[in-house]
Amino acid sequence: MKMDDAPPDVSVIMPAFNASADIRESVLCVLRQTYRSLELLVIDDASTDDTAAIVQALANDDGRIRLLRNASNRGVSFSRNRGIDNARGRFIMFLDSDDLWESTKIETQVAFMRDHACAASYMDYSRFRDGDRETAWQVTAPGRITYRDLLASNEIGMLTAAIDLHRVRKLPRFKARGHEDYIFWLELLEGAAPLPALKAPSLRPLAHYRERTRSVSSNRIRSAFWHWQVLALQDQALPARLMLMTRYVWRALRKRRPVRRRISNAVE
Image (cartoon, rainbow, N blue to C red; front, side, top):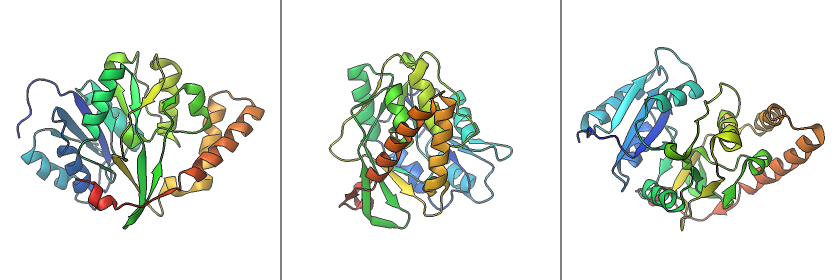
């Protein structure tokens, strides 16, 4: 498939580092979207495995894939920023190199954003442990999120988020520190986006997060420490930070509600 000269509606940004085990499946779930006007920017962060070769082979067959390679390992924040800088679409979406979408995810979300004129949207999603797709946990987000709502907990799953560049004053940059996605959304909703972020509804989760047993994000103590630091960056007084941390812990526990469905059968 050859890329059209006209810019696509949607730019999907996928940072990748040594992702050869899963990246093919993640790339294909983007290419199989029912919404066709898209580009996929894969930013290879100086991988030492076959990540770049796998993506290049797929790009040879589908011109909607753009492979960008970092000269050295710069981290996920640098890679996402580089993807944003090179994106041509009106709608920016994010998908990590081991997460998955169902085929109607983009179509559902773009239609919702056009109908509701919102600058940013998100969706419910499910979490599954790597190597075990028999059981998943649904993460159910609230219907709308403001900056103050977000202080209690990062309710926006990165793999579900979408931003309409036509409705954002200025897109923040990802910072090279813990909870970089959380800081990004706080900065977006604090000043860059004129309206709250809205949830695009779906009958079932259309995005699926792969939880690594030994991943950084699975370290609950470290994650809580990062959350505490983020609240300090937002100039929250100590009593407010303690209250918000309580809500954060409660929200983290709620993310473990089981969903009886097979992820492998849900992803098309």
